[in-house]
Length: 432
View 1 (cartoon, rainbow, N blue to C red):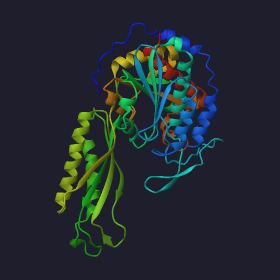
View 2 (view 1 turned 30 degrees about the horizontal axis):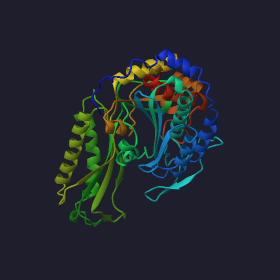
View 3 (view 1 turned 90 degrees about the horizontal axis):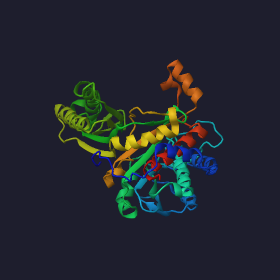
View 4 (view 1 turned 135 degrees about the horizontal axis):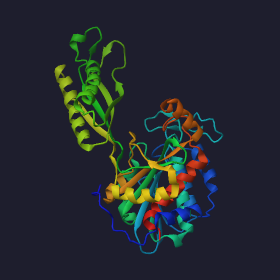
C-alpha cells in the first residue's frame, strides 16, 4: 500500500453535516432493494461460478447513467459514474456465496445445491453477507446517480466475485482493471458483522488480519503396518509437527502480538494396515503485523524440516503457499475524513471498530493502484437479541456469526445503514 499520506482533495468538498442532510432527505425510492436482496440471498453462487448473480447486478446497473464493464477477472463488474472534474473514488462490494447449509428458516432461505471445484456437492448460502454488500452498493449507486448536483468527480462502483477463495480481487487486477477504469485516489469497502443492527464501526490501522494457507507435504517411506521399523512414518511426523506448531505461537510470539496457526486438515494413508509414504497438513495462518508473519513462517518451515530430519526423512518436505490475504491496514487520513462524515450521518451509531481476525482480499485493489483505503464494518444483529446476549455475557454463544448457517441480517436497519454508509463515505470526497 502507498504510504499513509493526506491526499490533496479539493477544499470545496461537502462538510460532514451537508452529507448528513442530503442522506437524511435524499428521497430516492430504494424499495426495490428488498426484492433484489431476497432473490440474491435465495440463489447464492460459489466463488468463480457467479454467472447468474453477475447478470442480476448488471441488469440493475442499466438503470443508471454509468459506463458498465462486465466479465473482468471472471464475473467482475465495474460501473463508472462521471460527473465533471473532481476526485475519483472507488467503492467495492463482493458477491460470492459459501458451501454452507442455510438454517435460518426464512421464506427466502437458499435451498440451492452446487458442485465445488474439488468435486464435492454441497448446499450453498450467503452466509457472509455479500448479498447485503451488493444490495447496499447498488443503493448507493442510485443515490449518487439521482443527486448529481450534490457531488463532482468520478465514482467507481466495483462488484467483485470470488472473495471467499481470495482469488477475485487479484483476478480483476490481472485482467486489466487498471486499464479499464480511471485511477482512483482512494478506495472504500465495508462488511457486515455481528453487532447491534445499524451501527457503523470504523478504525485506523490494522483492522483485518493478514492470512495465508500453507500446504505442507511430508515424504516418508511406506511399509506394512506390521513392520513399522521398515518405514519412515509420515503420520507420526505430522502429529509431532502439529504439536510443535503451537509452540511457535506460545513460545516465539510475544504476548503483545497476535498470531494464529490452525491445522485445518491432516491427511495420511488409506488403510488400517499400511503406513503411507506421505502426509499432508493444510495450515491457516493469520496476523496483524507483517514482521510477525514473516518470523512465524520461517519458524514453521524450521520446525517441519527439523521433525523430518529427526525421523530420517530421505526427501525434504514441500511447502505451498496459497489463498493469500494482505493485512487490511486502514489509512489514518482516510479514516479521519470518512469518520467525521459517519459521525454526522449516524450520530451515536458511529462507533470505534475492534480488530477482526477474519481476512479480506479487498486491499489487493488499492494496493495495485498504490492508493490509501478504508474498510469498515456494519452491525446487523437485531438489537434486542444483541442486548440480551450482552447482558448474559453470551455474545460468542448466542449471536450467529459470519459463515454460520444461521447468520442473517436484521434487514431494514442493516440495509439502511450499509447503503447510507457507502454513499456517505463516497460523498466525503466527492460531495460539493
